[in-house]
Image (cartoon, rainbow, N blue to C red):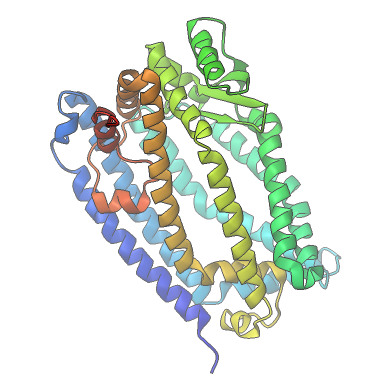
Length: 424
C-alpha cells in the first residue's frame, strides 16, 4: 500500500496551524496587557505604549483572519486536487496558443503564469487592507494607490523577465543532472544567489526606491570614522527614500569583499535626531560584519540548500509521491513543489533553530557596539526605534522564542545594562 503523502502533508499543515494559532492567542493576550513591562516603565511613554498596543492588536486580529483563510485555501488546493487540475489546464492553454505542450519548459511556464495570476488575485485584498487600512490608520502608510499598483506592476514584470530563464535552467539541470544532480542544482542556485545579491542593489532596488549619497556633515563623518576604525571597506553611504511608502525605519549594509555599502532609511534619520543613536545602530550592524555573522548565515543557507536538493534527488522519481497528490506524470517543477510540502516538518525545525542562532547574533552585535562605547546611544536608539515603529512592548515568551529572529527590546536592554564580566 502506497504511503498517503497528501493526507500526511495536509494533516501536518492543520496541526501546525493549530499550534501556531495557540501561540498567536498567547501573544494576543500579552498584547492586551494594560501596563508596560517593568523594564520599560519610565522608558516608553504611556502615549506611545497605548498606540503600540492598538497597532499590535489591529495587526493581530488581521493575522488571525488571514491565517484562517490561508489554511483553508492551501488545504483545499491539496485535498481536492487543484494542482493536478491546474497542470492539465495549463497544458490545454499551451496547445490553445499553438505551442508544443510536450515541451516541459513551456508547460511549466504556462503553469507558473496561472499560479502567479491566482496568487496576485488572492493576495491583493489582504495587501490592500494591510497597507491602506491598518498601516494608514496608525500613521505608517505614505504611499498612494498609484504607487502601490506601480510597484506591483514592476514586481510582476521582474518575475516575467527573470522567472523563465531560471525555471528553464532548473528543468534542464534536473533532466540532465544524473547522479550529481544535487551538486549541480546547488551550484546553480549558489551562482544565482551571488548574481542576484550583486545586481539587486544596483539594478532592481533603484526601480522601487531612490538612493542618494548621505550629505556631507557630522553624521557622515562619524559613520566613516567608525567604519575606518574597524577596517570596514566602506565604499558608498546612501540614504533611501523609505518615507515615500512607510514611516517605518531601518538601516542595512551589503556588498562583497572590499566593496561594502551602508544604507540608511530617511525615516531613521528623521526619527533619531541624535546622530550618536544612528551611529550606534550602525555600530551594531558593523558588529555583524566584524563577527562574521553574515558569512556564517550564508554558509548555513548553502549547506541547508545542498541537503535539501540531496533529499529531493532521493524522492524525485517516486511515482507514489506524485500519484498521492493526483499527478499521473512527474514534471520537474511539480516534483520540487511536492518535495517542499513533504519536508515541512523539517523546515519548521530548521527555522526555529535559525531563529535561535539569529537572536544570539543580535546579542553579540549589541555587545560589540557596547564594547566600542555605544551602550548608552544604542540603548536610546533601540528605544526610539521601538517607539516610532510602534513595535510590541509586551511579548509572550513562547511566541517570541518560536517566531522572533531578533530578541524583544526588554531582553536587549537587560543585556546592555548588564555589567561586563572582568577577568580575574
